[in-house]
Image 1 (cartoon, rainbow, N blue to C red):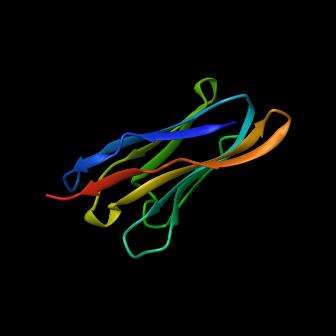
Image 2 (image 1 turned 30 degrees about the vertical axis):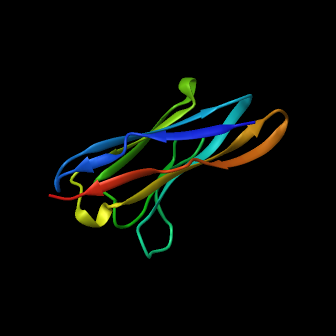
Length: 119
């Protein structure tokens, strides 16, 4: 069984930075794509950033140039560095991990971590 745990959320002032972590654990053979999604109150979940097994990255239009996604394959961990944060970045941030474990594919979500940008 694969578990995904996000961490690093919190309260930050506008213009500040946070780094989120997404750690996957279990009998993981390989991780393919990992995505960070966010959902603000009353809004649909949207893609913030994603990274492929080969390191290709893709960003949502609203975060491009401010957020950076990276991965540490040895630790099965993906990071989301968020700079120049704005109040509209306030949301619950979720990590989605897809890959192979125990000879089977998996696609798991974490429980989410709250990010609040406010003065």
